[in-house]
Amino acid sequence: MSSFTLPFVLTCNEPTKSFPKIIVANSFNNIKRVLLRCKCKEILSTYALSSKGDWLLPKEIEIDDEEEEFIVVNFYQFVFIKDPQEEVTKHLSFMQGQDIHGRIYINQQGINAQYSGPKRDALAYVNWVREDCRFSDILVQISSALNGHAFPRLKLRYKPSLVQAKGGISHLPLLDPSMRAAPLAPSEWRKRLEAVNNTNNSSHENSNPSCILLDVRNGYEWDVGHFQGAQRPDVDCFRATSFGKSESKVIASDPLAAADKERTDILMYCTGGIRCDVYSAILRKQGFKRLYTLKGGVSHYLESEGSIGWVGNLFVFDGRLSLPPSTDKPAVEIEASTTLDGSVDDSFAKCYICGSQVSELRHRNCANLDCNLLFLCCAGCVKDLRGCCCSQCTSARRLRPVLTGHQRYQKWHNYRDFELQSR
Image (cartoon, rainbow, N blue to C red; front, side):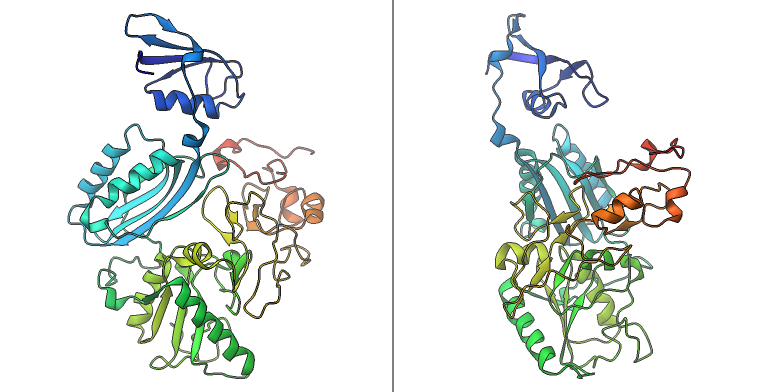
């Protein structure tokens, strides 16, 4: 393997925008990725220039499929960064030559990263980040990406807010751990969760519970999976979350409306933990004293404790959309998740259109490009409404083709010239 130098030149029998007819690779790692990810799965010819100026034959290039396993990595850290722009430059410099796609945001309050890549590159980045003492103790969540990258491209930049919240978060005391919720390890969370549900089951009329389970996500995330006993959030955007902010004591959509701010334990959870940290600082300013959050979020819990107490799948903000509790399983069908009392609850997920139980815990976007609503849908309604969320959308000017299976629509600009056609 040491006999060749740059460049590598390949010719492909099914050229695409991503893989043109002639491909020049800058490194041996890049040529391996081309061979593994080419749409046609067949390279007509592969050549590398030897140190003597001779073209080497394809058989001299070896591929190790295990090295090219793709994973998704998530982590965040609230820590003071004096010069975030300089920090961004350092991270971009490290990314040169790395095959990483995703969203990595940095500002004065820290870093928030969700990205995908070949295992070697993805882990190399997080290990490099951990070499900095400010990030040495970050909790990293890793899951499988079964179909290559889970993100379309890399966005690594300075961003004023690590999380999009109404009014921003730069004014929140997020760098002070005492102003955030106290983190509970997954094992402790499981014990608390069991106690909460046992208490709620024995006192259905309790208007002032001693403990409240708070889902700090969006309603559509709850729709595919949640902890047993958690109320569905009445928001479809985290920025609109207003738990604990209302003056009224009778708002049904707010689990904290009647809570005793001094005595009630608030158990908060989200996918990876960062939204809970942010919102707990908001609740702290509202006067809530007893705030707890699930350390590492649901993803950490499912990895550590399994699906006990969790029903359904886990919504994720990448190309996979939905993960079963055991992320090494490729299917995303409804699985029999065990609840705390030993029963099975798989009836909560309903079709947005007809209200029937759905057989797949995975959202789709409305085929109407100008609607693009994210919704759950049964197979019958997908067929009847041609992938749209309502009959009105079926007559829209710009309709995308009906997607089958686990496909996702491409970015909107790929369809902007679409006109309504009979399908």
